[in-house]
Image (cartoon, rainbow, N blue to C red; front, side):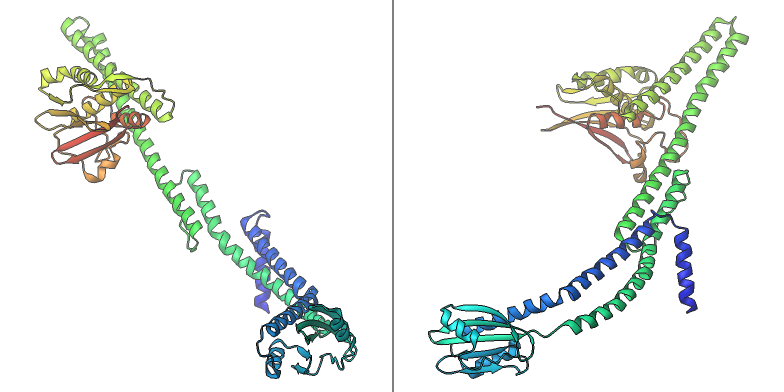
Length: 473
């Protein structure tokens, strides 16, 4: 008894602390409403329509018995008794010979002689079949009669008494009242625990989501409930958390790296400007040297800012492409020409192989950036031979542009990350000799805007970056 009281008190306190429109309350109310609906349904059909259903059932039994009598080839006393017993009905066959079969004398209407009104009326009517509904004077109960003509002078009278159901309905009604009370109490208790079990993981996920919204990436959405949809939701949120955590880490790295790249040239510019002002202003050679350094660092700073703006524009989705006809071979030669100083001063070698002529439809400025950045990346990571290979392959539907270095390659686990901003194998900032660390991210975004397939392959003999340009019909 104390356990029941404690349970009731626990449910009351839990409901007081639960919001009215919460999932727990809604599930609980739904289960209670469903139980009430089922009880009403049962009450409606088991009590109110019991008499109608009973009468309909008996009528169907009469019809089935009539069909069996019609289909019988050799109709005899044994067959008639078999049908009567099977259907719990009374049968009288009237003709040259009279056969009578009953499952029990109780409740069967005795037709008696041939002058019995129903028998007489039907025989004289010339009908093949007829239903009658009478009050059996002997037992004072309703009786259903099905009269049918089997042959020229052969008639069948099938009847079934309907037992009074008032006392049965009263008993069922009283029993159903207690059943309803018990079912409602069980629905309240079971519904509470079911709603609690279903709402608990949702509540946990909601609380963990609030942690994630506050920037707490330690949130864990795993639940111990074995429900597919909830587990799918938990897995999706855990995946989103991991991706947000990576994004946050990349953002911090980006800020640190951009800050470093901005700080270095600014420091150099300030230092050399002060040197010109305070020390070398009278020495033309030294002053020119210091001013050239300032110009180089300013160019580097401008390159970084331009790369950041280009990347930001590409990632925002607001980039509008200016599609035009481009001679791809000429474009690549212009990029190679831009690095001519490296060929002359540091002996870099650019090996360019291609078909005779290639015309594509693309944004010239953006494609120039792609070729420039991939070539610049190859320069920074090529091997001691300082060779960069640029190759264009042609097939039926596409042109494939490949830019290859001869360096030590990229680790397999790092290949999927190299398109990220400032990504480096050791996760530390590495300042490229001729770039800003944003080049591959810019390449990725430009190629995605053009809907070009792209990728990278790598081995210990170098890495090959490639992209495919569809041919225009």
